[in-house]
Length: 164
Image 1 (cartoon, one colour):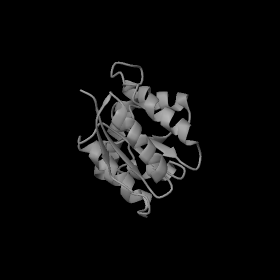
Image 2 (cartoon, rainbow, N blue to C red):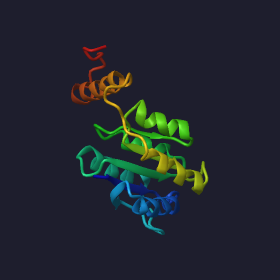
Image 3 (cartoon, helix red, strand yellow):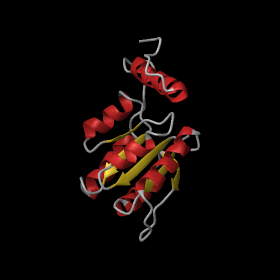
Image 4 (cartoon, rainbow, N blue to C red):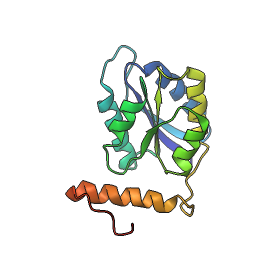
C-alpha cells in the first residue's frame, strides 16, 4: 500500500503545488493525492490551507502532507497547531532526510520564493523515500515531543513529561 497524500498552497505557492501534485500522481509510491487548494487565482490565506491539510494528517485520512507558501514557514507554523502533526520547512536534502528519520514528521513545507521548482520537486521525491524507524535512537525524542504536545495541549501546564 502506498502513501495517501494531501497537497496545499496559498497563492504564492500554487504553481509549485500543481507541479508537485502532478509528480505525486505519477509516483508509484503514492496511491492517492488530495488537493485542498488553492487554485490559480484563488486567494485563501495559508493558515486556513495548512490547518485543513494538517487535520487530514491528524485524523488519518492521509499519511503525509506537502504544503507550499512563499517561505514554507507560515504553512509549517499553521500545520503544527494541529495536535499530532509534525511539520517543518526544509530546503535541502539533508534537512528533508532528518525531517523524517529524526523527527517522524508527516508534513514537508516548502517556500516557492526561496527555492526553485526543480529543487522543490526533488525534495518532495526524497521526502517519500524515507520512513521513520520506531526503534531508532530518535524514537524517544519523538515520544517526548508527543508527550509534551499531549500534556501542554490538555492543561497548558509547562511541567516536563514524566519520562524526561
